[in-house]
Structures are given as structure tokens and as C-alpha cells.
Length: 40
Length: 520
Image (cartoon, rainbow over all chains, first blue to last red; front, top):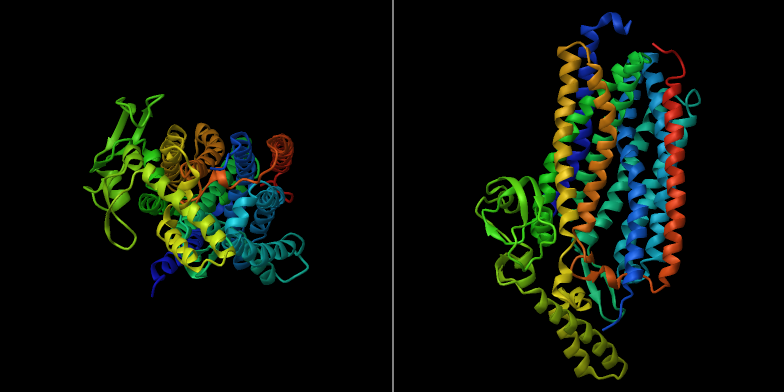
């Protein structure tokens, strides 16, 4: 397909957002476990 | 040859640059903050923790202030295509207008519709519907950017079009080629991620101010974590798309690449300048050393531009004088023409168009066929026909060079900054030194500088072209009195500055107020 590399490259945008979101959630959970009293 | 009023051209350029740069003060924050808010609201909906709702609403207020003023400047920008650049709009409006129209009808309407739910829908719609609205605002804002950047990408690399000599206009023959142009897609990804990085720095900077003041600590800490993760991931992606941009520029706009690197003499295995200063007054045809000093990485420019450390990278002199060999888009090896030869062929194309029109009016079918063929053979250089001096194909090298190096240096600084913040959060239990908190605030203006310099590289580096090789900037302006453009320049300057001051004052006031409920 002619535009396959451009389409795949464009699809990296939602993938990037998903990865960023999952990592943010993981980072927050990880921090809350380490600092339970601060988040009470 | 038509006479161009350079005062008119320069004032028109200044006015467009002014409007675009002011517009770009507001846009990147909108693009990035929208997703940060969406992440935060998702955390609220998933956990039911009311503190996340307060955090979301706080950042949403700052987003709203920024969004409103961004729209005001953006609308003026679109009008300027008609008022100041009517020749451009007439010549390529059939192509350029399509992505702009899609942006207005699909993306901007979606964004504007759901922004109302996002701001006023709390407690009026369900949590999930509100969350979907917030995500649609984020996606809509970024899709708006997609279509605008497709239009801009097309100007840097005109694809999917043909020239119709009967109307003397360029017309679109393949929409997908315009949309999926490698320049457009790369430009979109690079530009939106720069907005994400800027927004992440903005959130960290504001949160750092709260930590310095000992206020809204939980809001600040949670915001810093979300923003630092988002910033680190997207800043690494920004570097990747920057590499993609350099590759595209090398293939499609070699003069821009030469200006970005201050490369006057082309060479095989060209190095990449990491830090350097250009010799003032350097001309492409003198023997002065282009650099006062430089620190460079051997062969890196060849590798980034052509994916081979030994590839030949043409310099400014090579591009003006021609004579080097290159591979064209069809994979055919060719000897580059000099700028002078291209100008000659451009003038042949322009004359052939005039003769074609005259022959058509006279019903001279032989002359029509001859001039059409002549035009087709030389159309590749059509825009050069409006130029008179080979030197005029050289952009402002120092401005492009310094802007590029400031942008790149700041981009790598931001990656290090996000890593430092995450290290302090996880390995030093948020014990962040006051100086680092102050540094975090200082990062906000640096992020704006990086963002603006990126656009300077893109737009100054492609001069003298408004559409690469097809239409120079001098031929694109409206034939109006330059005094009218001067007056509106100062008028816009005053209005935009007032808007910026208003935005900053409202932002600062809102930040001082902080999160409405609770000051944990």
C-alpha cells in the first residue's frame, strides 16, 4: 500500500497517548504506595 | 518582469510572522494541557477520588483562559491569507483551502462543541459523558493542528497537485497524497509533541511554584508526576520526530538544511554542529571560514540527512552554483542545475504560460500545443522565474542556524529535566531543592523559546519560497498599499500584546487563587 509508512507513523500518535496515560497511572500508583500517609 | 514592492512584501511577512508567533504562544499549551487534563479526569473517574476532580478543574480553568485567546489570534491568521496573501490564495487556494476547511468543519467544531460540556457540564451530565467530552476536546484540538499542518506541510513539499494552464491555478488531483505526505505527517507529530513537552513543563513549573509557597501540595505533587511522565515520554518522541524532520528537510529542502547547519561548502561525510558561532558577514562565495568556533560530531549530518555517514550533503554554494550529483524523487541520478539555470527555465515556464493563454485566445492550436509542452517541461522551476538574482534562493542563514541550535539544545535539556524531576520524585521522596523548584519555573519561558525557534527554522529556513520551488514569497502578496499593511501591523501588535498581557494577568491571578476547594 502506497501510504502505509505514513499511516503507521500517524498511528503512533494515539499509541503515544496511550503509553503516556498508562505510564502516568502506573507512576501515580507507585508513588501513592510509597507515600500512603500523604494521600490519605 | 513584474516589479515587486519589497516594502509591501516585508511588511506582509512581518505581519504574518507577528500573528503566527503570537498565535503559537497559546496553541502548544492548548494541545498538551488538553491531554494532561484528560489523563487527570480519567484518574478521577476510575478512582472516584475527589482530589483528582479538584486537580482536573484547576488545570481546566487555566486551559480555558489560554484556549479563548488562542482562537482569537488563529482566526486573524486565516483571514490574512485573503487580505495579505491573495495571490497565494488564488494560485493554490483549491489545494490549500481543503485542509483549512476540514479543520474548521470537523476538528474545530468538535473541539468547540465539547468544550462547552467540559466547562459547564460538571454535575449536569454523567461522569463518563463528561470524560468523553474532555477526551474529544483533546483529540479535536490536536486534529485541528493536523489539518493546519497538512496545509503547511504541503507548502514545504507540494504534492498531489497539477497546474491547470487554463485557469493558471494549481489544482488537487490526489487528496491522499496531500494528507499522507511524509513532510506533513512528520511535521504534525513533531509539532504536537513539542506542544506536549511545553504543557508538561508548564504544569511542572506552576506546581513547583506551589511547592515553593507551601500551598496546594497534593495538587502540585500529583500534577508533577503526571506531567513529568508525559513530558519524558513525549520529549523522547519529539527527538525521534526531529530526526524524521531533518531527513525530510534533507530530501526536499536541502537549502534549509544547509542554512540550519551553516554549511556553505558541501561535503561527503558532513559533520553535525553541536555548538558553534557563525562568522558575521560570511557570503556563500567568499573564502571566510563560516564558523568562529564549533564543536561537531563527524559524519552525523550525512547520516541524519541521508542515512549514510559518507553521503554528500550540498552546501549553500553547491545549491547556488549547481553541478553536484543527486538522486531525484524517481530514483534517477541527476546533475543539479545552478540557481541561474533554474531562473532561466522558470522564466521560460512563465512566458510559455502567457503565450499559451494568448494562443488559446487566438485559436492557434499549434502554438497552444507547443507552449503547453514547453510549460510542462519547465514547470518544475516555475517559481524561479519570479526571481532575478541567484543569491535570492539563500535564506537568512544566521537566524536559521541559531534558531535550530537553540531549539535542539533546549529539547535535550528538557529530556534531562524530566528525568531529574522523576529521579527526585522516586528516589528522593519529593525532596526537591528550592533551586530546582525555581529552575522548574524558569523552564516555562525556555519551553516557549524552543517552540518559537522551531517555527523560525521551518519558516525562515524555507525562504524565499512560500510554496517550495513553485511560488516565491515576493509573488504571493496582495497588491495593496504597504502603508495599509504597516498600519494593521501596529494595530495587531497592540491588540495581541494587550491580549497576551490580559492572559498572563488572568493566569497569574488564577494560579494565585489555586484550587478552589481545599488547600492541602
